Image (tube, rainbow, N blue to C red):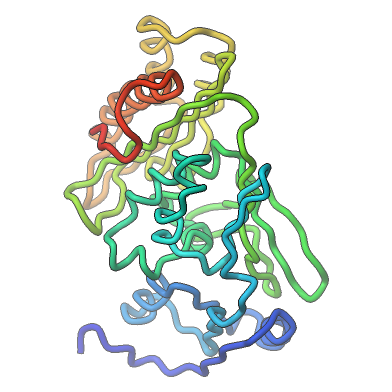
Length: 298
């Protein structure tokens, strides 16, 4: 029957890190962590995942924290996208992340889906990826052996593959506040409004002094920074000839495929259009002009 989970598994709901670590040590590859469940539950229903153990982490209070200490924003592993959207601090201090969060699926999905779960899924189209990459976020991993921090640029290894070890879990994500005046944009192309995955996603952060950070998703095996474009742009004031020169590098930065949602050629063409619109919106926003964050650019 459609929508019914026929696969049997054991369910645990640890109350603290100690209990969670013990379960991960005991069951290792047999276990899957459940946070929002918007990815895992669907994959179990559809027969793509067959965990023997499901570990629900929603009762661990420390993982619910969303806090800003003046320098860094900490996003606990069970913080949902709607909690990010509702945060005045996120909207004011990290508006590009706020804009990306608003692009995720629908209100119903965002009520459950978590940012940590989004990056752990490591799908090529993850909307949080470009924003975290340009903010140069850090993923905090914990296990019974302690804690380690991984730059978001090093977190993704391939489609649905990350650096997470068998006994580790994501404790949270740390997002440093840019120390310069800045403006950003997240431009997402989908087939329709609502619960659609990105066909192309472009995240841009421009900092005072002509520093450019560019990242993309859905046009390669992992979300990634566009280093060649950044190298071309950095230190130069933005103008139309420079934008045109940068657009020529896009095909060297991305490697889209043709699938049910879009052709390779369409993705390349739209990436160039979105890149130009995103750049212009970001620089205008930095200067107090341009479209409001959250306003669609494509």
